[in-house]
Length: 403
Image (cartoon, rainbow, N blue to C red; front, side, top):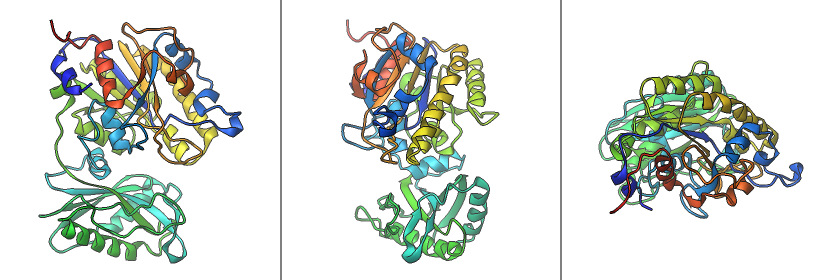
């Protein structure tokens, strides 16, 4: 179903919705766990109680067999068709740190990496360096100048930073330089479509000068660029669904995608699930009726192939569920933006489990919040961008269609 219909039927009143995203939560069987996934292995009494009293299903963030990036995965959850509203990760990273992008700015995400002999990639994340070291490296890169464009380099978090190029005639039609694998060399800067020649030359100059600055650094002696994007505005959740939305996320990239959807930003203090729950309460006190809450570490443990840590992160989130229930939301949804199977150490195309609690659900079909239970749940299998319609309906925020 097109979300345009949900937009036409949206009401400006109804229940308050929480969308809690356990990033990369979906997985595949782990031999060490006897064929169980981390979700199945984890002790999750609170999530399981929600599953028993709610409804489960599974969603494909983009489409069957398509591996989504974090940007498309989240935009789908917010009710945007991610193929129609394709936004590069660079723009999301810049918006997430509060950088004031201008129309036509070209942004890209930087991953500081470790390079070995022959510039072969040893670690795509340079051992997940500290944010402090990232900031030091960025300060050195800020001295780079390129004729005809302004260059802005900003730290994001840990090994992540972003670069923004401002000038006439730039294009986002550029291949990532990150091959996505260790043991490979960074990819050359090439265009994906005609008309990107100027942008390609600008990016090549930036990488050349950055490489000279970083070559003797340890452990981050190189960089990879991903998610080239020109900045363009999107219709907001208020415009589309008459919501008063808020976002609670620790990582800048996810604040960026939420900002693009028009969500007010709420800071977490402390910077953990406890602080996020308090921030969600503050959002409700301020009259917000839709809160997006993000938990990152289920994804990073999957990317590291650490299935035991992923279990621990799932259990940590489960312990936070009572606090989320105390906030007073009428509808609570728990899902992920994509699957990150530990054996793959990458995002994958596998469907993502969905739990909706609250509203008139077909309850009692599921006993636990797991991939296996979700595959046979009452909600069935659907496209990620259809989730928003289900949440609005559960909260009584959609009018009837037709006479």
